[in-house]
Image (cartoon, rainbow, N blue to C red):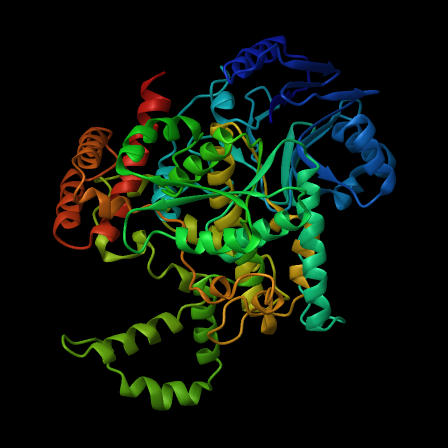
Length: 609
């Protein structure tokens, strides 16, 4: 669902006309709904705005309320009506009770105040820009907003740098200068020509819960059933992604348990060693007797789909697993599914990523007394490493990393913090950007939660950079392109709050990721799923490119064109291609993918204009 709108000091018919046309370009079957009252204008597609006595509301997604009265209003009159009612009852404190997976706008035209709001984990998107006349314009679709005649559609060099740092462009930045996007649990307040962005919700982590581990395990199963049931209430024939990991297997298992007929599950495979998880997906499918479907992605699929992928994303997006996500969603659509349940979020709620265990080791090491480190350990390890002394080199690397604070330590192997990418950018490019901006954003996010353990602070950090800015954008955009809705039961508010009551010492034990979660799922999930190593959903692009002429041609042609844009050092790009051929295909293949995805995005979003 999409909407666009503006909040001005006056009524702007040109704006209304422009967005009506822009929204039609998205594929609206009829003229978008438009509501105008006093100072506010709101145009909408696929979701109807509501105006009550000068207050305008619009909601995309699903709002959940703790109040039975507001839940009833939502069911009878829609989310926007309930939002307006909550505001008229409670004033600005209405923000305290917002829940669900949504993006919303509320404009009080009489008071001259407006709010743009994104849900707690950022399952949706909302972009905004300051109008030269002092107003605010916004849209859930960046490409529509960027075409507004009062904005200058200029690419941001900082965004290009951030793209290579993060492999996407995180909030609040966008690919365009002067346009920003909301982050998870953020609200932008607009009043009298001024704008302020705040976080309206933060988690409260509890290290000493009243419940026992067994009691919390029982609650976990109950909440999961409620979350999946709630997702099914959105209507349409449902199915679920099934990668073979813990989260997708859990969602499939719960779906199977509450469905009247065999649940439908969908998996993607690759004919590439080390990338295919379909054997594990089949184990889960057999366990829960699902109506299971598989599709194996090929190099030809990648070549065919890349232009469509570039058009689908509002900004350059470097997560190559978007391609298998699309083919999985398309497979579901071809088999009559309207609504897909995705398992994203469990690793970031219950500590399932390997880096959490790695950082736990560093944190424990750093708790050693300074005397022990400085007086005994470090003198035994030379300051520099020597060829042939691999153990000493690893020890020095460990000590160097241990000296870094979190979250800096998690970026030790970042592309732009390694020597391999020295010289990537053209002469003078780095003088136009702030290379320290990404790490400052990471530090700010990590520092937002101060009264929590390092593990929980890392989880909170990943709710933004791994989920909201990356994985959820990947899955949501690809599902929309395939023509299916997607919901995230593992990220519903009840489960999010439950995860905050699970102590860090239960979430992660030394060498045991997701300890609490796996213990809770014993007897429910197959043992093979509980003990398997974390795999991921990556695309073997770099490996395939070594032998597939079509992929090589696509990549080399894109890099040749990219050289002319002036962002990058041409000699460096040539060397990347050489190193991919002669050294580490997967490592340099990732960098080549980022370059290719960026160039194809330019071709379809800038050159075509």
